[in-house]
Amino acid sequence: MQTIGVIEGDGVGPEVMSEALHVLELVSRQDQLAFHIERFDLGAERYLRTGEVLPEAEQERLRQCDAILLGAVGDPRVPPGVLEKGLLLKIRFDFAQYINLRPVRLYEGVDTPLKAKGPNDIDMVVVRENNEDLYVGAGGVLRKGTPEEVAIQTSMNTRAGVDRCLRYAFEKARARAKERVFRGLSEADKAAGFRGQLSMVAKTNVLTEAHGLWMRAFNEMAPLYPEIKTNYYHVDACCMRFVTNPEWFDVVATNNMFGDIITDIGAVLQGGMGVAASGNINPERTAPSMFEPVHGSAPDIAGKGIANPVAAILSVGLMLDHLGYHPGAERIRAAVARVLKAGTPRTPDLGGTAGTKDVAKAIFEALSA
Ligand code: NAD
Ligand code: IPM
Ligand code: MN
Image 1: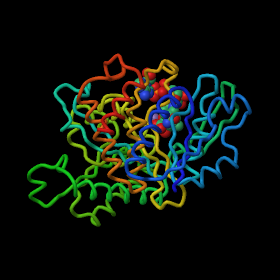
Image 2 (image 1 turned 90 degrees about the horizontal axis):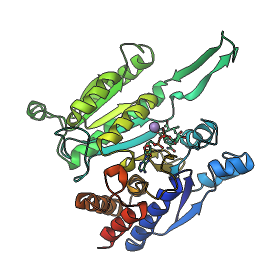
Image 3 (image 1 turned 60 degrees about the vertical axis):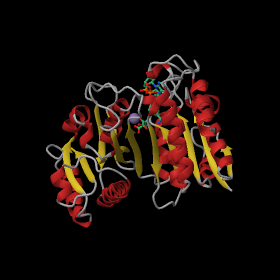
């Protein structure tokens, strides 16, 4: 019996999580997997009620889980950062979830805002470093509130932290190359023996120290993966190329801050925040990994029953992959693909008029068929 910790969180979090759990339950019944669901009352309501964000006892209970599913955190009634840093980032950091895995895949039947691009052009995976950079909270404020105020927030990059992220990204490129058409490789590249591609994204032309480290680490690791074609983009050019030439990308490795930003572009390429899934992975499995939609609590649509459950449901698929239950994960993706291809039902973010539950029900039925 494996235990799945569930943090529904705030806003649309509980709405999409409830549907994701139905899907998990169905797949585990079909495949005779035994999951025990352990719910955690964490997020804005708990904070507003008790002042607690992530009590130690709760964190220890989370640590005992085999994996965690999270809906979303963030609430307009709570000052920015309290829940985002105190709950979400604390779990990512304390549980050494140093990879943020964010697939960007355009499903058939979903509109991308990119003219003349289709499912064959948009299928990449972003490997975002998840434990360092500007997110570590190094810095401080002096003379706060005065005209002489000084605010410093430092990007921390360690060689060990960069190496482990890049190693994961190279391995991901190798694994993807085994099972699919090679993306972004020219015929000449293929003739030269390349199988798979890894693009690193940074800003070496300005952040010469921090990203000089990234570049050296990348260049030193590349010869260990001779069949993987490597290339490099400055982050500004990457933003442009995601939009003009998404088909150039296969696996993308980047730092925490840039990864946050470029994966919102990635989400839009694949149809929007409603369909983008992610995993916060601890590859060594010294603590549980956590799976969540890329989107936040969406206060503008919370409580209306129209949030797209696809991102949360695909996150369950990523969790099953991580736990080694690939057939169930594949069937979830196939069911989502079938419903999206059918064109209906879909939620308003994808141009439809259906509600969260209608879409989830259709996916549920596709899974049962
Ligand atoms: P957001 O992702 O919540 O919303 C951005 C836009 O996308 C909104 O218009 C929203 O309606 C839409 N959207 C998001 N999820 C959707 C879904 N499932 N279906 C349809 N439309 C969807 O980002 P935001 O508005 O910048 O942030 C809101 C709050 O969420 C903030 O407090 C922020 O800190 C937090 N946040 C949390 C996470 C997380 O928990 N992982 C991620 C991002 C933002
Ligand atoms: C995300 C979110 C988080 C991040 C916030 C809510 C801390 O934007 O998961 O993309 O910046 O990583
Ligand atoms: Mn983000």
